[in-house]
Image 1 (cartoon, rainbow, N blue to C red):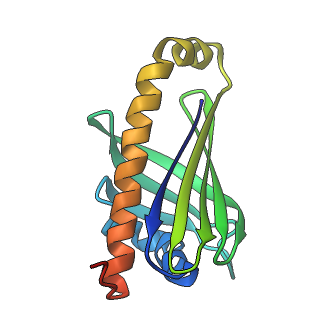
Image 2: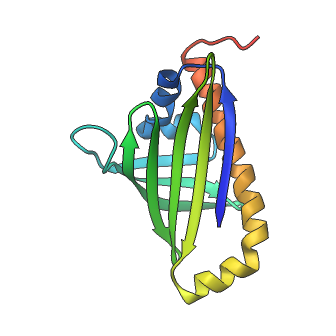
Length: 155
């Protein structure tokens, strides 16, 4: 399953990066995240950062452990998680325009177990639609945080 969503934010890439790379405080910016605990903090940069977050998914609280596998400051970061027989990969990428940025959120789920493969086939359409809604809500929350933190007026 591959899903990608994006949003336009009237801000500079550094302003967007400041919010999306502040994983420690993501629960303050993204309303679906109930709690967040840092498990491993790299000496510098984001690569290797590992955290556990609890969020509401499909009407229930779900706790997942994620870690950053690759990062380029002011550009993108990629994460990985493993749960319920699947490997999950996500990416947050900033594309800078003249007076705005496009923030792109990508997600890929790769089933590893037979059960996960069967469930993926059965639930793919439903899960994809729910995931799109969740990603759009997260992106809107991030946009609001960028605008508020940097005191940007969009009118």
